[in-house]
Image (cartoon, rainbow over all chains, first blue to last red):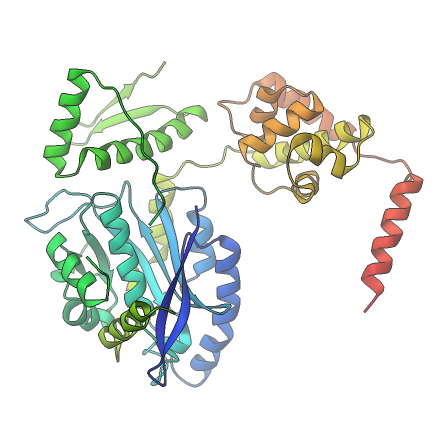
Length: 203
Length: 70
Length: 161
């Protein structure tokens, strides 16, 4: 199922720009996104800037989950250009690890990345800011919708730890040795609600 | 969020009790429990229709038991 | 853009300003393995049978003397959908489309569902018959006048700027 709704991001002039939030991005749309992102990414790499996740293949990810109703790709698009993608699992997913939420269902973010021109690992001045946060908010809203009360979990890549811990204020559950020694973060229901309040969602 | 429609359900006392127990154990509303059950049912049903079988596994005892479905 | 969306955009950006947001695994192979474990897989050797389905629909339609448009109308689906099905399929059409086409062409819907993989295990008699059909049904006939006209028009349109 595919749902589109109207949202907005901020551009380099600090102006709000209309955007579309898509829950249920199709394989074709992901392919178009990859075709759009790759040349810019390669140009960055030729100039000596390579991100940790440069080897990610969103087309392959989208195809791998095709037909499985419990994986979803969400994206935010300005005009015809995708500004970020997020893949979540919301059934048969890992459950919460925080002691107060142990064993409860959550929405697990498998992958999230922004378009290379928005990626602070590749550029100093992103074209649009807010895509990642918006997609995270969408995953939290999905968690609420399913009765998981906003619980969410993800493994952060090293350079994004500051974002999840300090900006989103997720709980740092520590280095996960079973998951490439990446740091694992969770939202409890309360922290998820705080995050929604800070991102402009009316309670 | 997806649009939703309302449905009325008739459940036996036993089914209602089961729903209450699951709802309280998982700290989820009864609606959320039923929606999750439906989604899980769809996935399992799709596999069964393809001719696959449903098992549970006891990792500690290293035992697998087939859930027989007619 | 509403005032709320505008405000929200500023709030989102204030949170994200100056940050890298990437999350997930670096070992993507592990993810694909996990998806394989939780997701039902296509049955082995499904592809030749999707081809058989395409060809049966095409030949049954022509046997009725119908155009693609006419079949689409009778089945209550879009002509482009029929066209796509008669061409190369890399995944099974939706069950409602399989059943609409089957009904319109007076083909057994249950068996057609088996061909494309929507119903249980494929009956070996059905798969055997399908293989035989696949081998013998390639056309060696010249194009009919209407096929020739359609092809010429299309080639002409492609050649135009």
